[in-house]
Length: 155
Image (cartoon, rainbow, N blue to C red; front, side):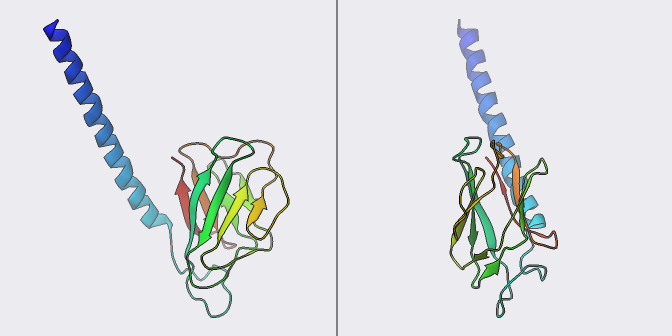
């Protein structure tokens, strides 16, 4: 009985250490990958006159896999207006949403819903008939020159 108890304790410690090591590796990989793939201030971005830096982020993906609640939240953290017309939001499977004529103002969040609906200045609709996003997938935001400006790894 004592040997089984000891074995159980060793197994629990092993599971904990393995999970901690895997989490640490993934954390640092994500940080390194983000630095390589997120160029800031690229001249390929469409900015209104007087702006010289793009600072846009994918804040998160809400309702992953839950249609029709699924949506991507994008925010302009820059100081100027950003024209997203012709930009695209893509997933790992090659699905892409191309932005219509839309301007993202500083500090404003824009939601791109996977479902159908009527576009507003802060809510756009992809028109899909099923969910787009899955856990572990990478959502990426590209400008018209195919330069990535933001990405988000879905937990």
